[in-house]
Each structure stands twice: as structure tokens, then as C-alpha cells.
Length: 253
Image (tube, rainbow, N blue to C red; front, side, top):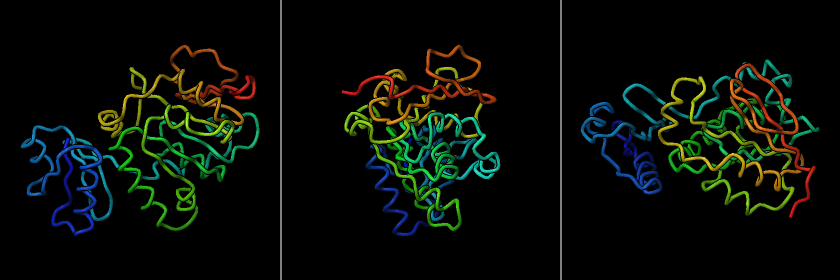
């Protein structure tokens, strides 16, 4: 992987690309050819491209960037969506820690439907960099989508370490969405995300750490086709199960 820019970058874009290169500890490559040609020349499968309008991850076949995705459709489903039902299983949910934020699809969904503040944790410096740019871009818009993005924040670092540093019972709900060994059907570009994602901490460890931090419960996203582990409650969606782990059923240290 390497970092580059759009053609004829501004000073701002150039400085942004160099910052991301330092953060991700990969080479900065001056943009002198098309992205496919640069990938071949440098023997790379992925390029991070800092641009005037947005930052994006590029391969020969895919493009990945932070966007609203299916948020309009999710709004239409309202609070009956199984993810929202799982978040509110034990009552109101106004604050969330998302331990594997990814491109913020779940965080945006929760913020838009529940007006919840979402603190995202992201271990991959590449994904964090996409979020850093993307959330600023979405927040700069107007209307309820920009307001939803404005309630999101993201911190770079290992999720278990960050959870350990948080006070007990300091958020309503903790979300755990690990990348499983057998990928479930996903939107275009997800395979590209898997290439740069940090290896997730053990889901059981995240659940245990999350139960200490959550006032209410932890929600684990799990493939519906798989036999799911023991939990306190389960909300079924079309392709996913949302497993609920009560945080109040055990004492916190």
C-alpha cells in the first residue's frame, strides 16, 4: 500500500497525504500516473488517495470512502429496524461506544434514529484516516444527515486498551462488530476494507470489556446462518442476529 493524491494537488491535499503516510507508516508516492498504473509500478494492491473532494481507498476494481450509504432507507424503517431494537432492548439509548467503527454505517444509523452520541474506536490507521476526513465532510453538509454525523467522534487505537481506560458504566450501550473468518455478503468495497482493517480483538474479550463500560448492555452483530453463542437476548434481522449481553446482571470492578 502507498499514499498518493489527486492529480495536481493543492497544498492542503499534499499536506494531508503526507500526514496520512506518516500515520500509516507507508510511502508517499507523487501522483504522476493513473492509480492502476501506480499500483502496478509499485507492486501494490491498494492506494490511499487524498483528494480535493474526499479521501478514498482505491484498488484496480474497487473504490472505498466514508458515505451515508443506506441511511435514507434505514431512516424509513424507523425504530423497527432490528439493530435499533437491539440498541434499545432495555430502554432508551442516548450514548454508544462502537468498538469497531469501520466506515461508520452503524454509528450513523444509531445517531440518526436515536439522536445518540457515538464514540467510535478504530484500530486501523488507514480506516481511521478515512473516518477523520469523511466525518468532517459529512458534518459540513446540511440537514439531519449532517446533524447525525456531527454526533460522531472517532479515536485511533486498540479497542480493548481504550475500553480499559474508560470509567465503568460511562455509556449506555457498547457495539461489537468483529470481522468474521467467513465473510458475510456485504456491499461492494467491503473486501477492500478487509485488506486494511486491523485484526479484531477476540469478540468475547470485547464483550467482557464492554459490559464493564456499558450502563445497559452490549450488542454483538453475528451472522444469522451461524449457531450463535449464549447471550441474554437476541434480535433477528434478515442476514444478522443482534446478540444482547446485559451489563447490569454482574457487578463491575
